[in-house]
Length: 474
Image (cartoon, rainbow, N blue to C red; front, top):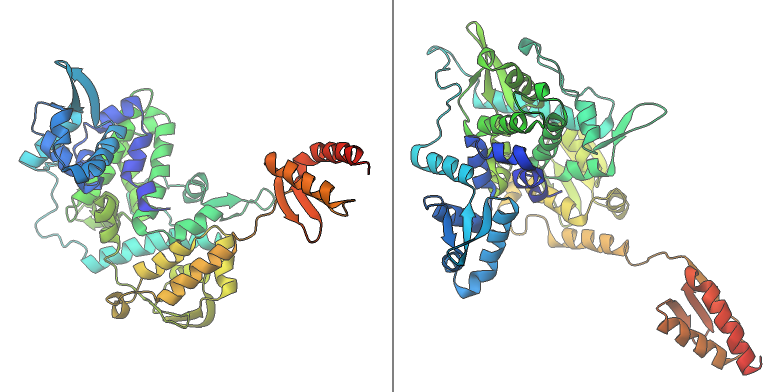
């Protein structure tokens, strides 16, 4: 579950019709999408944004040297798949046309900056004391870890609503189940983590956030128009406004939002984002103000920017070449995640001591977690004392994880029919050649006079052996 498969670009690729058209009229969504693209794709848009909207494909091809033409083609393909660019015929030649709404919003942002037209006048009182950076980080960590801990054991309480906002609570268990991260037992009605949930735990924070937010937005798009803001019957504008609002939270880091001044639909979305830890509510004077947290910045960061923002938190894991793992943490979530592929040897109030063993690694592999995901998790959360080393995780550990993974694919079970005790060598060699030509041969041994073919080929092979015996007089 890489970020590339769970970020803003992947979500926009799934939008259709009116939803996409309306999204491109939203300023913050436009800027966030621009930041999420690959560098070369951003360069192409930056060159086209101040043109008349159409530019010759021959001129676009000249943007890269011959040795970089394949990379340019990949960037143009990405922009075309997002429907930011389209091909058209103009004056007898092929041209690329930039989406007019996206072009207008991006040009305005580049030339005039981002202006919050909805709540430009909403500012907290001059004497207001905003939450400190550490308080914002602690709140975000508390809410997000509550979600992860519920995902791990299913028995703890998911992040609950914040009563000062007086809004309907987000149904976190249903959200996780709809995303495929948890499964409900039909007899006990208890939810437990799924195979996809284990992979989610080891994914980066940017990927985790977008996995949850994509499912939340999908719920908004599937609901009636009144459930997701003002919009048409297909829910397009309301969904686009919701996306724009979420991205605005991260792109306006440090600027709080006055909760009472939001519309009804926006208040519901803001309350749900606060429940997930993207916004921290604080009472200032007579009003409640919502302060964006680090999670909001990660969500809107886009691609590598979002991943680097997520990686700014100090790591806590040290891996030694003898497969010992030391994690300096007091977080029950971090300990639970490590337990998925590390055997726990000792657990102190602020220290987890474990060992990566064959059994612990293969148990994680059986859950669908890959060797690369385990190694990436250890690198992303490396303690500062080892984060500057190269490699961060000893090569002997990463190589052994990949070898254990390769062991699981050495053997492959297939239904087969086995034949032995052939009456003559000619009968055996003829049967082997017949099965090989038909593409049904699985195994043969001249020494043991044994032959194995696909089970579906059994009737054909039996008929062939009967005819050959008659022909050979056996």
